[in-house]
Length: 465
Ligand code: F0G
Image (cartoon, rainbow, N blue to C red; front, side, top):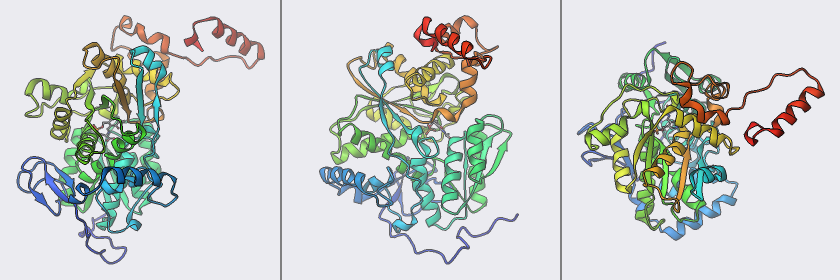
């Protein structure tokens, strides 16, 4: 099928030009521009762009807090979105009618009593972004970026993905009447995420490469075909993802925690949260910055190595390998943005092993919350930062859980069956996981069999239940 030559929609006449006040600023040479090329890179130096708007600076902190609080009791379309509720600090579309929303955001902040006991941190919270409409934090950014894609008249949107971006993009494209093209690494994303993209109607290409290969190809594609890229290189995505931090601070009555800990993959989310924190501090919405720390899987630790081996000056790419497939990325696009916010906030960057990830995931599951493997690096990372003395038991800590438990059922089943590390690590090394495993019991369909099983469970350690 030949691609249409124009980026404009053929559904009607081109829409009016944006009367936006925002602009794009290069994070490298600080050049400001009113528009951005399709690869969202600076035309001067090729670095990534971010969005800035002088209108944000004129907002008054106490007025903003009260407007945002009032909107929580409103049933207006924009106010029902936990992203657009904070629209004073977002790029403004031409009109509210343009907005594509699935009521994203408004995600819970949970206490973690069991993890508190395990770590000794009494004020330990999870901001669960897996409770978004498509089950991951991507929706907060996607509502904004998809809105601007449609406003610009695009028929096709596209992304490279480890699964969650593609699920989210496909949903928002469908909702907004656009078509979506998904590029995912063949065999390296969970079926659950892939099935979402299919159900939402995406043209889904499983490429024989890894995520980094998919992203490279997409970067070339957007220069050749009128598709709008919705990876987190797209700075509109990061504006939406900022609202995670705004909502979190509101939930904590604007008292910042000492630490926020996030997983790191392509590093868009940490960059977005960091940008939000700096803007909030600038506006007087918060009195001080929390330390923002990024945790990666040992096998996909490009940022850890970039900081450790290159002092954050240039990217050290890796050949990624981890069962936390969401963060199986070796060449993170937003590494420079992430380095800046980690350094500006005084945060840390560290790595955790596959066993530590599996254990932390099961522990978050045991809270009755659950998350996908990539999200669990946060709890595993917290334990490590505590051992190093970077986090102190008396401090307040927020873990950002990025994806829902149901995103990767294969991982969960393999864990409980004891198959997760089959043939890869020594059985002895996984002894700590045993008490966390719960195998289903197959029984004859008799009352006696069930009662006997119940009694056996009651008489064994509580974890057996
Ligand atoms: N957690 C989950 C569940 C993710 O899906 C991702 C990224 C991350 C953490 C890392 O966030 O890339 O902003 O540093 N998933 C992308 C995707 C790459 O395609 O779904 P990041």
